[in-house]
Length: 370
Image (cartoon, rainbow, N blue to C red; front, side, top):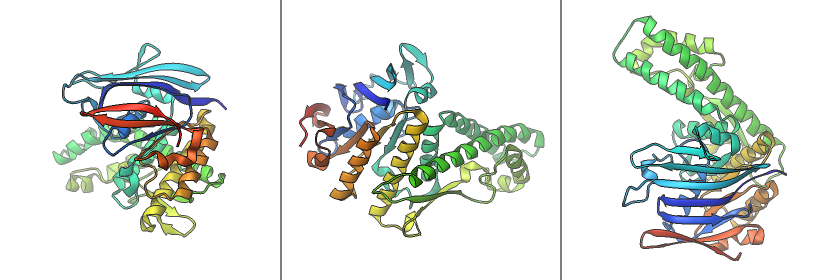
């Protein structure tokens, strides 16, 4: 099967890493070490091989190593399908993130054409019991993995909505001011809804066809009435009709920014938010694996999978099952944990990297499998 894997990764002045260079052989990567030594910073660097702000949703300035504010740079050699690409991404002090692919300046969206990156981080463990915003963000990351252009639709919609909200707060009543903005929102919003529904269908199909140790999640896109209209004309009409209500609220109350992702623990028929902590974690892992299986079919190679502190809430048996599924998929998964023993079930199927910290600087060294 064609592969998607990093064979080299270089970090310079990035977070706690003054300088690090990793040589990789395509196997899963297990990073272990005490809390706070810089393991997650490595995963964040890998996450920046995709469009966006990475797994921490941090600004370019926040990623720079402190003190000094010298800016930062990441370099990677990426084996993607049957090609090899050199990727650089960096930010100068006070600047935005820049990307270069094979020596040529590129937009971030171009990263989505040569790589797919999925992640699961501890902050997502409360996904099913917190507000809808986090679930929308999760769904949009899944959707973006299938359709790199989804991000542009979201940005177009949000920009037009901000301008419309400004008119609403200023109590502007001239319909002509709203019509153009609502037209842009309707076109982009319909694309957002269609992309999300297609992504959920891909997840459902991937779950249905898989033999897995992890539970199946029943998924649905929900929200207030009119939150996810299917056609531009329908959304445009809903926005026009809702202007009086929106003006009273000072914001737009109709559209895909109000949608929610609903999940049900299928085996028990209970909402994900009512499942146990361990079951909620297992559902998240199941969705990440389903996303990875579907992407393997669509993209032609398994995605890079980032699993931060993945052992949390998983017993030894389920950890071993997860490692077996990752290896069967053929994905280069990057996993972190506090001790090498957490990855014992992987044996020599993974590269083991120990991360330590000295004087505020992270260091990485390869170790033998436990």
